[in-house]
Image (cartoon, rainbow, N blue to C red; front, side, top):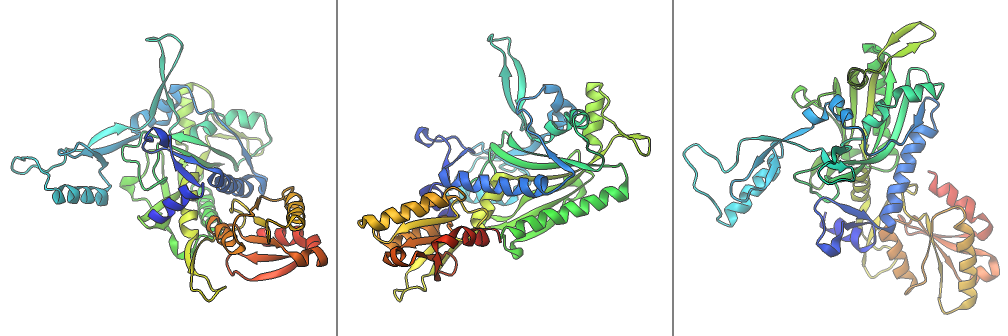
Length: 449
C-alpha cells in the first residue's frame, strides 16, 4: 500500500486533500491521471448499466434535500455507528473494527502507556452510538439558519423522484434508475487511503420490480451475477474477488437481503459493492411521511402496488483504488540484459488514463518531432493520447508503464520513408511496425477488448 500511495501522489493520481494546510483527514483530491481513471470507470459503469439497456434511465439528484427525506428513509434514527473510545488517548473506533482495536492496544503497550483501572474494567468505554450524517445549515441570518444534511447516500434522490420519472417517461415495471454522485459521512475512523473517506462518490442502480418473492429474487440473482462479472471483465483478478452474504444481525435497516462483492486488498477482504433487496421500504416510507401516493398502477393487469427495489450500490473511489491495487506490478525488464526492474500498472485499456503515448525518437531532430506531433494531433481527435519527448526512449517507456498507458508509438527515421511507426505493448514490451494509416483502427482493436 505504501508503494501504491507513493505512486498515486508522484504520478498525479491522488493527492491528500488541502495538503498545503496540513490536510483534512478523510479527504482526497484526484490529480490529472486519477481524474481520467475515475472518469473512465464511471463511463464504463454508465455504458453497461444505462446505455446498453432499454429498461434503465439515469438521473442526477441534488446533494441537499429536505431534512424530512432523511427522517422518512430512517437515516436520522438508524444511520448510526456504535463506537468505543480508548480511555488512554480518547480515539474512537467502530465496535466491529476488531483488528484496528487490537493494533491500537498494542501501540499503547509498546509505548508503556496505561491508566489505572478498577477491577473488571477495560481501557475501552462502553459502545456509544454516533449519527454519521454530516450536518449543514441553510439561511442568511445567523442564529436563524435551518439544519439540514449533506446526503449520506445517493439512493433517496431516486426514490423521491419515483413518480416524476414515471410521469415523464414510458417506463414499465420492471425498470431501473441509475445515478452517480457524491455522498458524505462523518466517518469517525477514515483510513486505508481512499477506502473510507468523509466525502466519496457512489454509482447506484435502483431497480423496481413487482412485490413478488420469486420474481424479485430472480432479479436479485441476475444483478448479483452481473455486477460481479463487470469487475472481472475490466481486469480484476478472479481470485481476488468473492461474494459475502450479510448475516441477519448486520443487515441495514432497509434490507431484506444483502450480499457484498468483496476484493482482497493488502489490508484484508473489503466491500467493493453491495447488492441489496430493499423491499418496499423506501417508497412506502416516503408515501407515509410525504402524504403522496408512491404506488405504481399496472395498465395491463389493473393492479396497484408499491414496487420492491433491488439495489446495486458501488463506491467509485473504492473501485478506483481496487483497480489500482490489482493493476500494480513490479517486473524484471526482459527487453535488456541489464536485469533492471520496472513498475507497471496493468490497467484495462478502457480504464487507462491514456490509451497511447506518442514519441519522436529524438527531440532534437525537427523532422521527427514534426511528424510525431502530426500523428499525436490526429489521434487526439479520437483517443486520450500522451505526448512525451523527455529523456531517452527507454525512460519514456518506463514512465508510461508506470501510469498504465497500454501502447507507445515511436516515430523514427524509417517513419519518414516507410510511413510506419513502432508500437510497443505495455504488458509484453513487444514491438511491431504499424502503418500510420492503420493506427486508428489498431488502437480501436486493442482498447475495446
